[in-house]
Amino acid sequence: MPSIRLLSPRLANQIAAGEVVERPASVVKELVENALDAGAGHVDVEVEQGGVKLIRVRDDGSGIAEADLPLALSRHATSKIVSLDDLESVASLGFRGEALASVSSVSRLTLTSRTDGQEAASRVEVEGRDMDARISPAAHPVGTTVEVRDLFFNTPARRKFLRTEKTEFNHVEECVRRQALSRFDSGFTLRHNQRVIQNLRPAESMLDRERRIGSLCGQKFIDNAVVIDAEATGLRLWGWVALPTFSRSQADLQYFFVNGRVIRDRLVAHAVRQAYRDVLFNNRHPAFVLYLEVDPATVDVNVHPTKHEVRFRDGRLVHDFIFRTLHKALADVRPDDHFRGAVAQSHGREISGQGEPSTDGATQARQPWNVQPAAPSFGGQAPATGFGGQASPQQDWRASDQMAFYQSLSGGGVSAQQEPASFAGTASMPLEHPVSADGHEEPPLGYAIAQLHGIYVLAQGSAGMIVVDMHAAHERITYERMKRALAEQDLKSQPLLVPLSLAVSQKEAALAETHGEDLQQLGLQIERIGPETLAIRQVPALLRGADAEQLVRDVLSDLIEHGQSDRVEAVTHELLGTMACHGSVRANRQLTIPEMNSLLRDMEATERSGQCNHGRPTWTLVTLAELDKLFLRGR
Image (cartoon, rainbow, N blue to C red; front, side, top):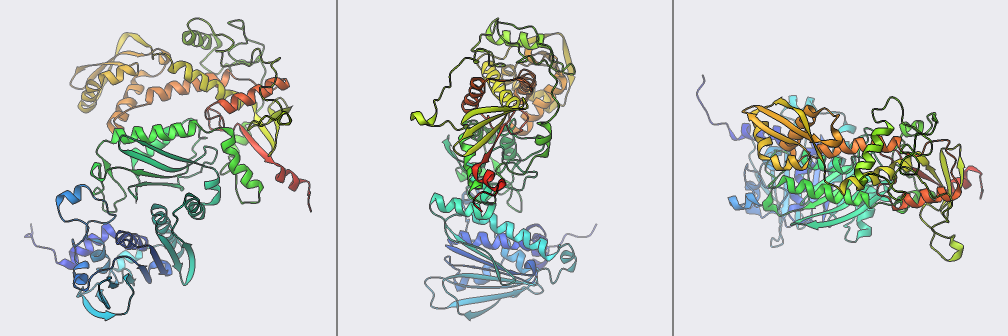
């Protein structure tokens, strides 16, 4: 075993550089964060050859005094923290004092700065080989300029891992985009090979902020986004979340900031996914730009070298706050909120309206429909399967199962007002909203005028023609009513005839014992009968046919990772969604005009009515401008 030796400062800095400086974008991130910490009102970033040849970051911040210049390039030297108390409540973006030392060890670095109290600026130069700081006078306004040339010139192995110039610049551009989204009060300029890529002025007003987001994230995002701003228990969440119909094939438009620091956190990602759970199509991803403001003392930013991860003191509180805020915001979305993006498209903007096209939804809407003989009715109304339709024989949930469930919710019967699966009694209903000529405001989805192939309802509005998938729309209405009915009652448990023994780890067994009351509220009665053994004695009555063992394991896994679990609720809602799907109006069911208008009015009053339970769109708008274009009107 060799003897223990102290590492040389150069070697220690290069080891730290391996963690801090991964590529040119890493350098840009550290330098821009330093500029923002210095109070910069404008940050100018210039790169050449993707940042490998040159990275220059200028700012008009407070600057660095001449006496502090050599120390600024030393490792673990910073002006941002002094004591342990400062570290436990970090409010700045940088705090470790490693960035400049790490960057200078793998490049040729020049730092020029001047403070407001100095008559002239000073420059310090350092090269990776010997790292001896050379100071000289210079001309420079108040602020700081850092030039990084020939990145990784003295570590060829690291340079070989860099990608093409285009790829490296894309990472740099993404880095500047994140910083520009994090600080609306600062302006940003980005140049690549002497060409201006971004030129953003400070954005103080809400309109200016939305313009900046439109410039950085695309105008179609901001046209299809909902503004949120909520505060509770010392937390504030604000920003923009995209409508569920504006979804992405990948998670490439998701920005989350904690006290101005961009982060990627599993707890946050889980809360967002949970909020969008039953409104996104298969394997689609939501888009959002969100800002969480918390007391710096309640979040630990010193978790990862890149500072992209944080740890919350009360993760469960944060998770619940994010989920509930987003869940309510999405639930409050109504059809008229969707019109903003669609109408913007009609005015010539390059907008996709519904996000990236979903071919699955298009083909699924045109699947053949099988009309079966009417099932026996109950409660004197139409059957649970709706308008003569019957559940597919491949499904586990027969009509008798659905009837029993509805009866359990309503105490023995389902009235015409309670029944979620039909429009019974609406055939002779007058329109809820008279036509706009009578002086009443036109409803968001307009008025029905016809039915197409027994599948789509065609409605007319001032913006154009609205096409509604009547099965998908009624499926969402039915699903939301069933969820409401279930929420009004306690979740009933059913004892197992023979308790189910479950082998788990000691950690899981202790967790089940500790959270016994929480599990009981979910309808699960679990008893610890050994160091690594649990006994499942009761399960939710609605899920009596589910895999109880897998359900309990999933719940315990959620408790370990997130401190809470919605697994029972998710499985229950999945079951309700299946029942709603087979209990909704089927294709080829001819509706009267009043029935169609009743459906439209129900959609306008129903949460998340823009998507069915599977995330497919329930309606779309064909604007007058689009129709004019089809027929070459105005040319």
